[in-house]
Image 1 (cartoon, each protein chain N blue to C red):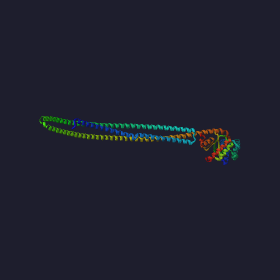
Image 2 (cartoon, rainbow over the protein chains, first blue to last red):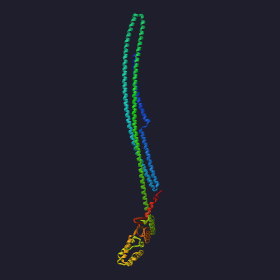
Image 3 (spheres, chains in turn red, orange):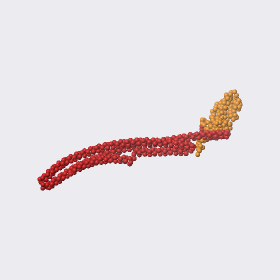
Image 4 (tube, rainbow over the protein chains, first blue to last red):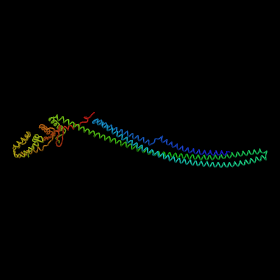
Length: 376
Length: 167
């Protein structure tokens, strides 16, 4: 039969085991939550690229492409205008050089304006993306905080309940054990007292009356002690069996609690996953739509730029043609004036009246060849 | 009503040739016709001899030989017929840089008779600023063969740019 200190030790060990097991379950739940959370974050940041960054890269690519096309158009227009000038051959080198400078200035101006436009576009796009990213992150952090708080609150409530239950169970066990211990102690005390009395009386009687039968009595006393030892052993086994039953019950209850905790944790994880997936899909849709609209805007900008370059080129071509005609007209006038002056200086001094008469008659023959004067 | 035959007309036109001279002749003939009552046909011829050149005088002699013996009324009528004919003649104008001499006027008139019509008068305007060539105006049509116009046409049909290339 176990002694009282041994029973106390068992009870304390059981209580310590229950508390440790509860703490272990709590730590396991927290660890599971943080592990899932970190794994999700790692999968988002590591495996898949942020769609906003992808959209930004795509926007930069589109703008670069548009820039290359615009540059190509400008160079083509420049080359064509240059070829026209080279082919015409009626314009002086200085004019060609002037045109070359004008075209370079125009191309530079166009590219500067395009770069500024592209930078503005990229800047605004980047700004919008950053803003949207910040808002998404803020929203995600808020959702995560809310979920964390909710989960923490649930776990805390669960831990409180668990603690309360454990405390109650411990109190009940302690009280039961104390009651049983008191009963056993009382019985044992009574038994020991009566045994002591009997022993003293028997010893006294044996010593006084039985003398020779003392050995026999001693043997009976020894058998009685064996009986007492057996009864004690049986009592101890019974207590042990009862305690084991209570332990099994408690173990089953704790197992159920662990199952509940696991189910709650899985449900919370599923909910977090669904919320995050939903949020991610929404953010992806928004970013995709924004990227599409940006792409359309970029294409429109490219078309507008192309049209502007074409208009500018046509205008330059027209200006060049006007300039050419004006220059040629001026050249004609200058040449004519010069030739007339030369003719006046030279012919006026060298042509005789006879020459004039001959020239007039030849001129009239020219009129005769070209016009039928009799038909007028 | 007296008339002029084609030969007479041609002879008259060939003798007069220019508008300027025709105006002078018309004025002379009008004076003669107005004063015919004071003179006779013989007086008329004497007056013509003093105021006309030989060619024209010969033409008038030829035309008026039929009326020498007639009365003054018939002579006046003949003169007025001639005046009307001269005034009805068409003109072709020439702007030229030199003053035309008689021989050149003759050549030009022959050219016009051959290429425009037989009975026509020439009207000359001398433009010293005109360097060379001729401007002819006939029935509202301008035919300019001046040196300026020739140069202008020449430069307009030629590639003037090649004269100003620097390469």
